[in-house]
Length: 358
Ligand code: SF4
Image (cartoon, rainbow, N blue to C red; front, side, top):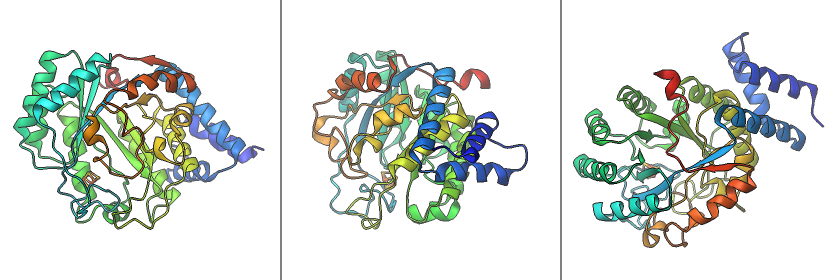
């Protein structure tokens, strides 16, 4: 049973999420929608999100090949199994040749974007620049980097080498929540990195985690406002999943319903951002990536890391598809798209916001 107040608020947010009345009213609208766990109301929310996705992005799911190339990290994020204080974490660093081989497999699978991801390590920026250069001169594909906070000079070097996009999740824009997740690090630094990346001409992605300790739906509503107003090209949303070897081991996992409502609202307010059906959503009690597609997501990122290292890249436990041979995930990609009611788009699929900015 859908309450009239729910329908009115949803229509208001879909029409103009910023709400002409006031910034507080805009936040209250989002909180109200995030808080509704009624199945009929959630159905109405995700159905509208999927319609908006189809209208602004097409009824398609784009594919990015993910390569996790190092589990080494200098940071101590309290939710993450790769944090440097975890002695049980298995560390690996792929060689440039290993990364190039993974790029070959991504290209061979017909995928035209590779996402190179690692912990925040101290690898010489020139080594990664060389890898980027070699991939770009060998294959016609876009490169997305996701290697954390680095200097302006490093970001510039990688852009110059041919990197197209950069993912840097903010996790929360509330300074206190941010600090409670990231020991000894400040939100301002993250924001400055995001600014630098944009200035350098990257297509920029960010994202948040849902259900972390101390987070409320007010925080999430403010995250939505931040992510929408910065016009990010890509936005990742996944549930918090407690890792047994971290300080958050006894905390409750984020809710699937709340994560899907967050995703749907991000679709409704951002219109044409690329929103992945995240692996975290696929790694809960069951695989919720199809539900994510039905709630407005339109990206899937099959894992192309070598099979012998896949299980070592354990930010959270229970990660899906870590035993399949490299590239095998690409095979079930088609089935997931179909189940989500979408066609597959194998192209490099650049930002849909970029044309508007140019
Ligand atoms: S979340 Fe990223 S930066 Fe933080 S500890 Fe894990 S790998 Fe390192």
